[in-house]
Length: 71
Image (cartoon, rainbow, N blue to C red; front, side):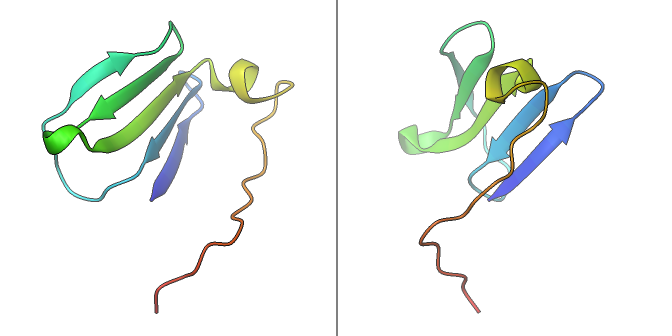
């Protein structure tokens, strides 16, 4: 998983799968969209106007809860 933020456009992208996928985009609203890959697998989540959507003008801290890291 990779989370990236572009401050120029205030967009956050959460990429769940590595690699290149041909995706269709499912818009949830004006700010949020899901990228759906082959087999209806969720590839990524895009959040526009991220600072407003996710918090009080600041990007939130990310907490990984009960996540095991592969070695």
